[in-house]
Length: 261
Image 1 (tube, rainbow, N blue to C red):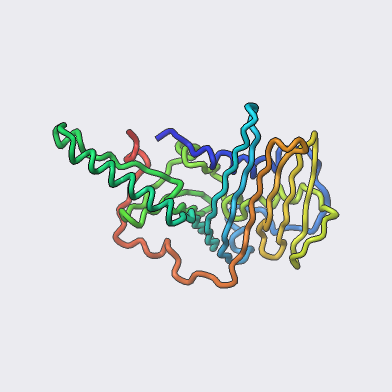
Image 2: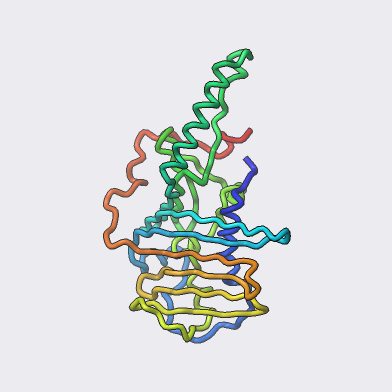
């Protein structure tokens, strides 16, 4: 499957765009040592809700908006991310599958050619990123079909994964956050400080919680108002005790290639 979600592309670009400016590093309060495989031990466990929003003005004068929400669990060596699907969206998807099955049932073609092909939609399946022996791997866990789908590095682009443990665990690499100067904007959150920079009419802002080691707000846009992107991160007061990756007994191990046409 070679298609990539356009919404995900835009929102991934919003995070990447934060660091494209060539502002030199500034002296700031130190972050934990950026040594692969040690970050998760230094940073606290977190359960998060993450809201994504983007608005783009096209050359044709059309304004396109997109928003969605995810939940994330962060533990040493593990990051679990799941899309929050509104009930009406799931019902609509179920209706589409019902219509598809009816078409297959009414088909006059032989049964072998009428078999419904199972597709892999990484957007709506929980993503599990693992760090083991300083190596990153990613898999998707489908609780409905009880499958664990391993993704090889050659297919990372097709599931919008950049291969970075830091970007998964922290949402933004702390080393790169540290290159953004502190802002004069006052933070209403204790322990969190704004960082900001602007160049050629493009701005980036990050509200970084130095204790939790996570961005609370990520913003990017331009002064001409042709695009604006925002990510809001909310740490939850309590932590999940039953971690989903510890409850995969009986799940089938599959490869991404099993779902390719």
